Length: 496
Image (cartoon, rainbow, N blue to C red; front, side):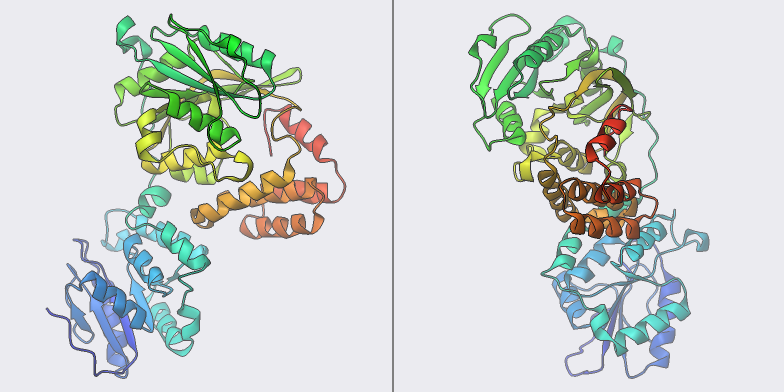
């Protein structure tokens, strides 16, 4: 069927896109037919694809993409099925989608991912969800009576959000069922001796000569048959060239940060200097346990599609130690939106260099103060493929009062606000959004900005009333010392 000529028809337009794939959606066609029959003063145009053609409403089995976008901008209301591509296109055209999801209990799809997806978008106010014919009719009437409520600012915040809802990806990233946890390949099955690839370990450092030497000793002591090259990158500090060694299986190179000053630039300097296919990170105050690298490389050798492997940690603070091991072997983008998963510490990262150079890109140097650059990198990597995790301790992580970000509360707050702006997907995961907002509230309270802290605490509680960080922020804003809170959490191997 061809698209009807509508140039001379000045009736308000309702445009419905049922989708052109093989999943039928006759129920929505019936609702639209009934609405068109009851409202002859309204044009109802339906893109129906594999679904049967409308009878009362106008219909077409295909609309050229540019024409579809133009019709969306013309329409008083846009009705979509639960597919992310259609929802994204409607929002980019400046329309708040009226979404009706297929229901598997009615035989309309193989599972309930559209229902879960649309429900999340509805809670985030990114669509208007309709579950019945009566609800759809009332929503369409409202769209015609109050058109401003169904218009979006495509250049502002809503435009940024729609960009984040990339076609075809949000179902996979945010609503997919938890995948089966694949087993970790055994290091005993990996090739022996010469079959193990060389690995570069990037060690950024600043003002920690004794801790740095201890870190390098732990890398050199790895029970790993292959060559391990440590690249020490000095940031805001004069390099100690005496650390450099050549030859053998554990050489050390010493460099100065040649990129943006800060942790991110130092990591990228090491990544670019690496001449190996595999790159690992290790902070200058952490130490690797002997079997860490062998076990991780075995995963990458067995799984060519895997780009990054992490492992568990043991947090050391004052005289206490706490085991932090994630009891799963695969981590998705949705997992990381819900939780930072502190167990995935940067000193555990082993990454294919190509993923950083030609894939998702290097460590972000635009994050204020480089705070949270490791988390942001994980988010980008997880968008491409699940992150593999070895549920065993592989690194001893030292937490101490001389941490680089200790007391830099305004930097922390600014960086976390940057993160929320760069990843609008947090708006679809209320618990994850509340976690970051609660961290901002705490940072603002610790820096003495009581008004800003209260505002962010309320934002946190509106998103997720059970988020403990909001209450900690309120307590600190009320006079509880932030340092006392942190010390108490650190002794348990936790942070804010």
